[in-house]
Length: 231
Image (cartoon, rainbow, N blue to C red; front, top):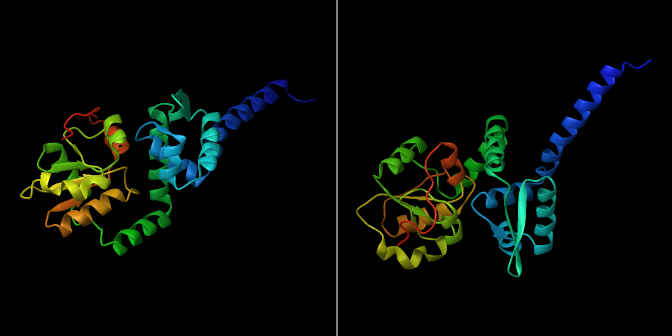
């Protein structure tokens, strides 16, 4: 005879772990992780997200539907478009935890990152904690080189919004005698690498901070919103 209490306990565990696995399955595709990363910067339409993630609109929509079914993202109609956003801040923290776990357990993550940065000549000579200190104390000019919509959704207080697409035409607005620190979406975002490369070629003292707004929030630091400080 089957122990009814044991069976009920087994069914309970199977049900709970089955639900937990829904999150893992939804996050099991590289492009879905990238989409979550993009949405952690702020809401976006399928069309914009598809372009940023290098996907067709149809494929981006399919991935977003999987994420929505796992309740990691939400969608709402906005005019003629559907705008997606992360369900809540816990989703961004979940993504951050995955990144930290992968970095600590998978040597390949650090190796791929190091190789890319070395090939680009973008290995930062200033320690990340020192850059963070300079940013927090206001010793440097901070540039947010993400698109304006992402800046408005949340940015480091005091940061200037200078999207990478506008940087070349706005160099004259930047202080030449002050150290500049550029940031974008985090350690895997290349916009800040491009920005620092351009700034150094033009004679500026510039550094890349690999922290993004999700990391900034996770440290418990205040996040500014809207057009605060945007020149």
